Image (cartoon, rainbow, N blue to C red; front, side, top):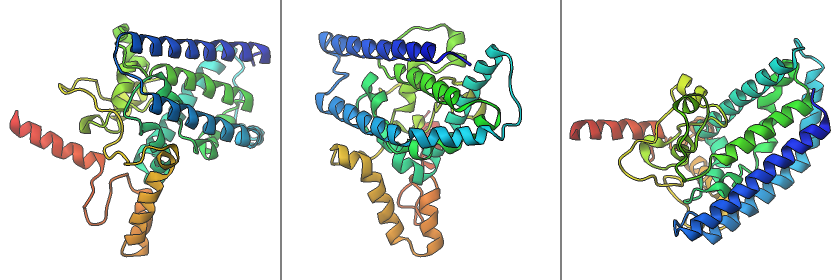
Length: 300
């Protein structure tokens, strides 16, 4: 639909903007002594980004061919170029919301996605702390786009655009935006909630570009708690080295599976939400939120 050179120029400009904003945020953070950045954490973010980049390159060809093959069985085509791109970006963002939702509510996928949430800091480089293994399964969530008549190159390009937008909202700086904007699009405030480990904020605001999916499906939450945000996960690993950051939840999951009393329970550990346990010694986010609401309702 768009000329390849125009795409590459747009991507180069957007990546350049992201790098520029990151350097500005780093400089301001140190200049104003805000301590948004920690050297070890930032190095880990960059390391995990490089891993994800390499894995993306390895599987990109297969991703392209899977989408291109599915495109041959498209159900229809959208001729109007404006409608084509608007529908592609909006639908792709919704399918990402579904992918993200699964990453939070199925422990098998959480074991991979937790890497992105493991930092106790929140800044533009946190967006680089990728779900490293996501490229291995992401294509299956985007197959509907190919069946809808969107070609493989355009799908990958739309994904890159929404990802770049998703990176830019990883900031603690208070950015004033029009109220209407926050009704439609993800803002830094929305995404700070998403990365918080405060119980009421868990598993909220999972949109990448559009926040409307969270408003529709009941996963939206304003940044409105009286206490400050705590970033990271509810139980931080003792070892914050990059290898353990990648595999600590896998270790915990396999330990739970090992101690499960029967085969059916073992499978439940893989596919039930994080925190689920057969004997109740750990709790899911929803259970913790119900208890939190009950406690604060009584004390109000």
